[in-house]
Length: 456
Image 1: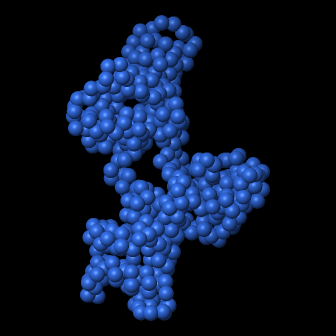
Image 2 (image 1 turned 180 degrees about the horizontal axis):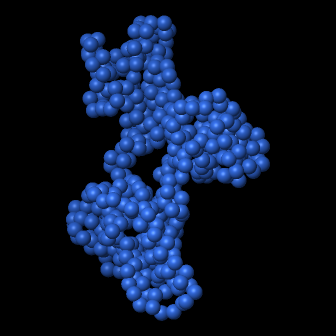
């Protein structure tokens, strides 16, 4: 997050009192339920609320005195156990997004969100906030349990029990042994990532003929049972070393199973395939239409049929809305080869935003230099639009994350990755001076209204 001049806000760990002072909602009396965690990845330094499964949850930041965690002001009709279950489910989703484990250290609560004292004062990784615009909230039992098992496995510092938790994900995804074995045999050769090469080399050195059988017998069964052969001996470091080397195989298979069987992509998959750029537009325009456009086929609609485009908000993540970019109305949609050109405008048509949908590339294309147009009719509104558009330009240049929201439903349509200027030097002082001058012009027109000519 940045201040009104575009400068980044401090990410220092604050005292408990400062955290409560910054967020009045956390001072409300109620039936609070809290899970205190041991963070293993960057955690926010400021309170953050998020809507999850129909309830408002709070991320409690790291403070100088207490554990961080999550909390809910429990509704009167919600049982204590149900509130805790909701918080656990939320942590499992966050852990999946972060590709990490989350250890719950304590359960607390009371009339306010009281957290346990924390002896450790250094060594934390921090962040300003999480981006929850694409937050999932699985409602079916299978995906929920799969994410919970993944959070548990990634939290364990015991290789054997982590191995077993990952294997339980495979059993959940493929309850029938034959189907599971066939899937594993097809998937194992395609695995890559951290530790995979070393795991294959370790198994090869043991002259293993069937990797699936080896992982099942010398891993899953040897950990779960104390009878039969082989058995994992906690006092034998050779067993621990072997499990450590082979763990990446079952870990990555568990990740694949969650993606393929439960339809929950990892953040790396989302990023590599840019699934978030056109997801909402596919729902609005339809897969069939975008598929035809992707193949550069001329899309001919029956006479009288119109494309029903919603009003949209064009925003940047973690910044307040910009007035002219709110409730923009669709002006035109045009097919150009294998892309669609969309133009949105303010209701008074003094400002327009244009962008392209490129379904063949799975991309939304927005050019900040050529995608925003303004017309100055001498009015106060036109001056305000210029001021707001300069603020938008500045914030976008400062690694802004473009978002398009459905103004009618409040749902996220599309977003882009953080903008990184290339082959240019952005001068923040000059930009702020331009914004200040534009604001002065707004004030001048407010004091001296009247028709004036000019254009941007």
